[in-house]
Image (cartoon, rainbow, N blue to C red; front, side):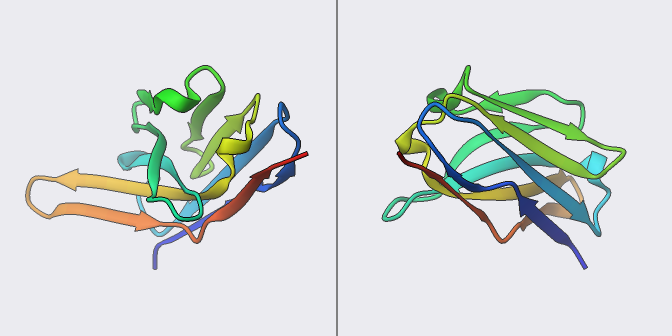
Length: 120
């Protein structure tokens, strides 16, 4: 059974920082591209950042220079350090695991989400 369990969300003031974590089980973690997505009220879910097993990263323009995604394959854990938070970063943040294989196609899993609220 695959599980992605997020933690680290909460309420923070504008300009503050938070660190999200996502611990995976039931998958060969290092073989998966991991990512963070977010969904604000009334909006579609959007990509925030991804990191491959080889630690190549990709960021949405809105978070470049403020957020940093990383992973520890020895702990099956994904992280995202979020600095200089803005009110528009308020959303539910979801952990994602994705793997594409030629024969079996795409395997994708989601966590349950963790709320991040940026407000004074």
